[in-house]
Image 1 (tube, rainbow, N blue to C red):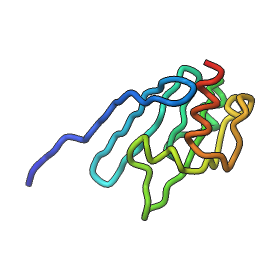
Image 2: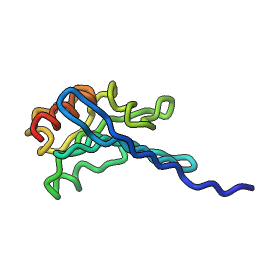
Image 3: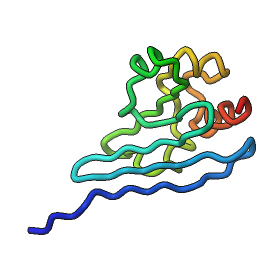
Image 4: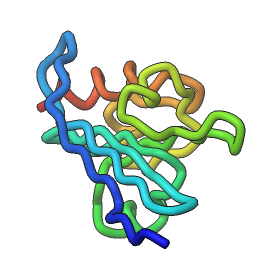
Length: 110
């Protein structure tokens, strides 16, 4: 039996309004991904918006499914936002917009 390390990738991503960092982490039976901007994070459902809001963070969450999990940062581009903190909402991010649109909103105010 082999014991392999988890996979972690960090990569720069370019958007119309600037640059961000894409992160993907995978381990046996699990994964998460996010796009980090100077203003906040667009991430998968692993993030807790209640805790993030308590700390004043701008977080917008997209949710994958078991059939189509969000694994790599690019998976967030077309995924729909399903949750967000009040701080992200104040930036103009809304439920139902794409992850790409949410990143662009965050970058526009950076």
